[in-house]
Amino acid sequence: MVQFSQLRRFDTSFAAISDATRRGVLEQLGRADASISELAQRFDMTLTGMKKHVGVLEQAGLVTTQKVGRVRTCRLGVGGLREEAAWIERYRQMWAARFEDLDKIVEQLKQKESSDGRSTTE
Amino acid sequence: MVQFSQLRRFDTSFAAISDATRRGVLEQLGRADASISELAQRFDMTLTGMKKHVGVLEQAGLVTTQKVGRVRTCRLGVGGLREEAAWIERYRQMWAARFEDLDKIVEQLKQKESSDGRSTTE
Image 1 (cartoon, one colour):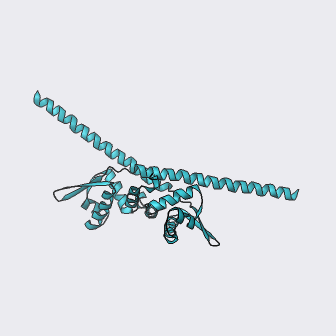
Image 2: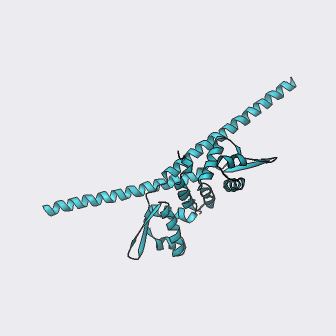
Image 3: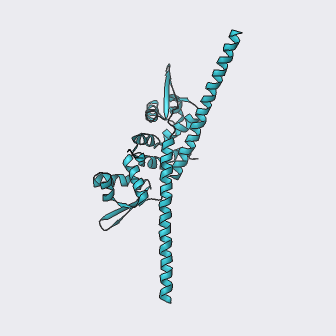
């Protein structure tokens, strides 16, 4: 059985959103479709640089592009980061439980200390 | 104003979880603290390889380590991916709205087509 954490697809999608420009491009395309050159201009980047970023997003299924004439239009892809969100959510629950456990241990140690303190003074 | 998408910190954290082994390490440490060598053994990896992965997680604030004698123990760090989860959630909402818009446009085109069809046959 493949563990959830071991889905290689997540490698591509999390890597795709590990760049501020690429996250910005996704937000921009969430508002409206845009051509590569519009995106390049908006993010103050060369066409070549923007093409690379869009390529990474495309490979992760987060963006699709379509060339009509000389213009390549970018829009959001079908990948909606649903399972990635679920992984993070699961991790957050585990994380919270783990810190709650630690809090309890610290609390128990404190109580033990204060009761030990009392028995010494008796 | 720094945009949410432009938080450079996200670059480090999303990159840290863009690797199946590192996600596995986080899940493992969510169950119990572990030494580097225990982790290396569990993920069938050299000590050097595991040290690198733990280093990446540590830099992202997702793991902390403490060396006692010859053993370096790893535990979950204070970084709980809370804001990263919020970014993805915001993106998912935008994504859903965008696809809903497209659905509406397709629906309108269909209705127009069928009413055009009717007026031609009249």
